[in-house]
Amino acid sequence: MTMFTTETVVHLIGDPCLKLYRAKGKGYWYFEFDDQRLSGTKMVLVKRLNDLPLDVWLNEGRTFAAAMRAKR
Image (cartoon, rainbow, N blue to C red; front, side, top):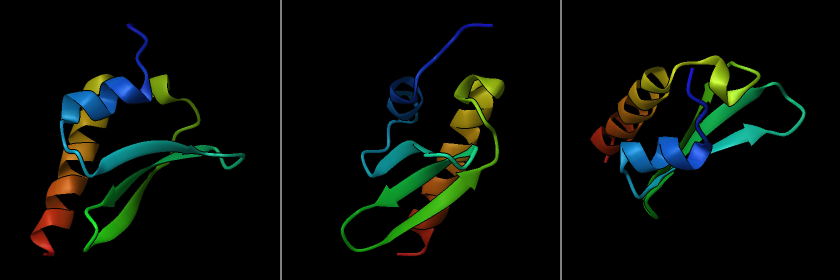
């Protein structure tokens, strides 16, 4: 399995309003969407970034960003 970083995930999703963070000490990650008018987060319950395949991260991030944009 190829290792990847949060920067790789966000770059491949390609949405400038999306970021990916690890929740410190909590054992999960979260996407954050912020376009100045609308913001939100989506948790992904996994301890290590590379515990999920890259395509799963891309799908989660793209789906979340699209859902946030649909709320505008």
